[in-house]
Image (tube, rainbow, N blue to C red; front, top):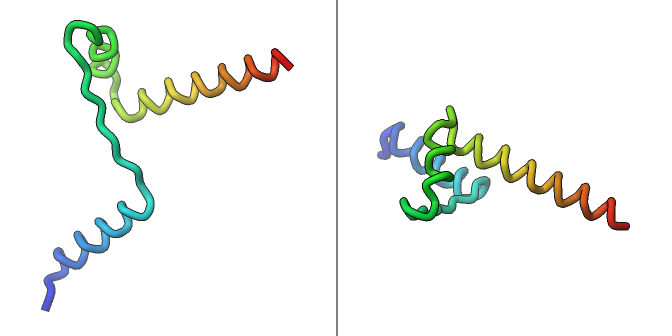
Amino acid sequence: MAKRSEFYSDAKAAWEKANTYLFSVRLQNSTDADIIERLEAAPSRQGELKRLMRLGIAYEKMMNEKGK
């Protein structure tokens, strides 16, 4: 019989597979130093990436609407 922790990890893995998207980014120390510095200074790297992406999306949307 499966232990509770095994069931939990299987259920969590299934939930993550169905509900999340995972990707990784490799940054080069020399050419991406500014990005690395910004991410290391942020309280949450994931939060900082999401914030900046959403700012970029909002900016693009605003520029597209302005051009119409």
